[in-house]
Length: 173
Image 1 (tube, helix red, strand yellow):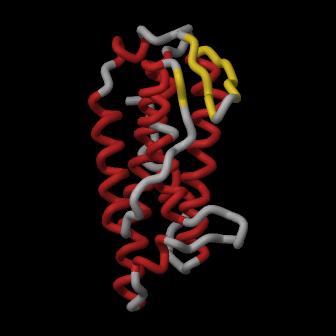
Image 2 (cartoon, helix red, strand yellow; image 1 turned 60 degrees about the vertical axis):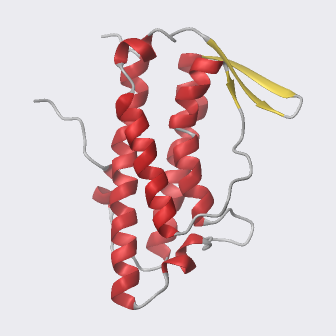
């Protein structure tokens, strides 16, 4: 069975984005229950040399919606400077990313199969074709940042588990 570019990317992003949205909700509920300020979570990091929670959530959006936009344009850049977001702003960013992914049509994405795309930062360009960009760059980064965001919430005592990370699986109907 062959798998299309759409099937390997968009439903996978949506499954995890849905999970991220869910564990963000649980994180907010935990803050309210414990009397903690959600803003403390936004800048929390597991280790001093790691990016904070806000960067992890931004990167989930960037490596999903941004990756799909890169397939169209042929270039993927690291995220630029962005204004700070509070917890609600991060939740809105995830909701917006989900909506943009849901709007993508299989034929539109599949038409990009085999297209050249490069990861570009400064003068450095790393060349890919659409499929290898998604499989070897975009999805690993996407899952890394989603997992790190999950781990930050867990480290703060949010009662989430593996099922919260897995999201809604695409089971046989």
